[in-house]
Image (cartoon, rainbow, N blue to C red; front, side, top):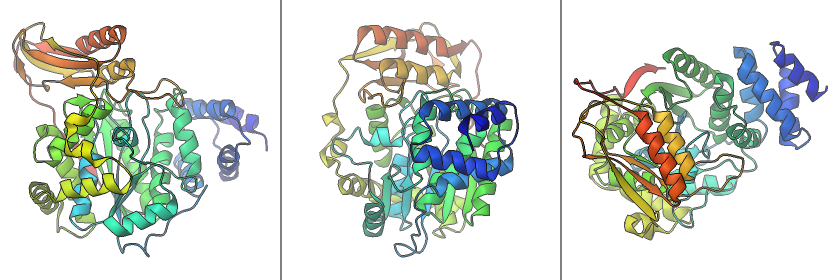
Length: 434
């Protein structure tokens, strides 16, 4: 079997066999297949797609490219959640400790940024000393001890996805339903969770731009989860504007901390509560998702979610003084608030342009292995539907370079559309699949 033949076959729109998919995954994981050939096949998949059988084969090949955890010796039931990614999506930082504080263990294997924004691990690594490279033994020990783990793929867990995830980020091969499905579900299968809540984003700031694509992605992931015996619920949520106000690693961590203390933006807080409610229902801690939402509210209000977040930071080597006193986090050298150029209602936000503005500031990766500037980002001061007066604060940019600041400001201004007439707010969720 030759890799070039697989590339040509998929280029021509033909389905790869189970054996060919296993050959690719095993060869790339072992370092036998080079990046340039892997990237060529990924692009062919983006352009030509994969059928359900191919997607399932790719998912399982990636999951079983390393160890698949059995967590029954750690906890009788473990839950996980995953988002398909969006601008300002720091949901895991609030949801995971909230659910774990309710006595339901959360074992989450996360990724780094794909496209224009930092991922969950990038945000957590804003905390000095935080380790996101736990071994399998450390993963299990921490889950047993404190009931929560947020780590990256170890060398033993879904190593194929770890390599392909980084390659997709810098080769324009992120936006593919089969590749997104296999990436997410291979990690979930390998990490051993019994139940998974999937947060499938749709809109300008998501990989899925249309409701049809979001539905297809959600259905595919639920189907694969069922095939391997997992309980799976998928929620389709809005990403036509950033979630919360802050976009940028340290800025998002601070917003998550505010939320864990009972504050934070209303949309972000409500979104987190909905995801947590579904997880608590699946895990048997609540009789319904609505009961789960109420339990999550009480857990945050009582300070138990915050204490669990602190335990997570300490357990993984982070300097807890930074989360206890967020003023310790370094700030960008340029912090500038831009006034609204006109009066009216905020009618639309190009969330992808907000993300690209943060990328321009250095808050995302342009090529594999790029370091991130954790200090930079954008904080919006309004949501779709809000009434704004000319000259009122519109957004604040955090930058460490004047030229980058200028580019980011122009991008954000182009991303915002005003209307002279009232505009309804955007919904948080559009649907649920189970």
